[in-house]
Length: 377
Ligand SMILES: [Zn+2]
Image (cartoon, rainbow, N blue to C red; front, side):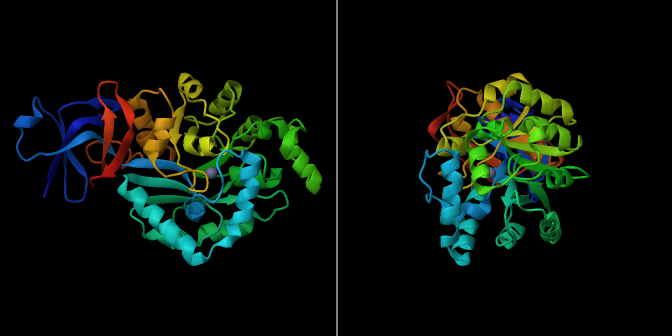
């Protein structure tokens, strides 16, 4: 049984178009996209107020941290957040962790998230992800300046479909381990990148990270790279799908250097709700747009965000045109995860999921405070 679905607008080919009817078959594959002159005169069309968009892609999440919702106070800055998370992490049972991850997964699906690049530290919640309707790409993150054993994590990742290993960041992994994970035929890498100024300062033997490492007696053998961006450009294979997450303190020169290195460009994943929660910094969305970068949106975890809502994150990106925000949230994320053949856009032959964005002010084409998404199929 085919369904014909319409809304006030539909996101087609990177544009918001009116008078579109999308026909899908029973499996959710798009079989036809009709341009009509007057929707009111079409019979057998399901009409939903709002904007019809494809299922969204959350390009950065830590589903396993869903149990920490509200456990860490807002606005403490990155160093405080990092130490707080260490403090509160242990105080919950596996049952509680599983329950909260399961609830968050179901909510993301209902809100129209189709695929997720999900960071993991262990495999406790892998079964939830394997059984979910959402397509997860799990990235087990390797970190620790005294951790030289990448094999154990590689072995863990190899037990699961759609799982691989990634370095946590440019400040928490030594050189040999960083290189061994980044080089080779890695399909997907995701790095927390330039979330705070301290990451840059470390490479200048300055700042709180440097002081902390000195106090602990930890030495970094990667400072010779000169900066986080130079380290990435020197170590990452050029044909990797590279996701750089946060980028709040990235400068134009950093972005250009990495864009030149990675074939087809990196994906610059922005998590503005998490930035607001932790440090009140805003990602440089304008600069990234001007440089022509591929921008995607991540929700980060419930440890550093009130919700895992893509709309809440879009709203925080300020005066970016809505159609661009929707592009970040859909096809750009799909490209970042290598899923663009089937997901991320409303095109014949694809089965991207269909979602309604409600609560848009059509006069200004902006998201209102009550804007939200829900899944149709
Ligand atoms: Zn993260």
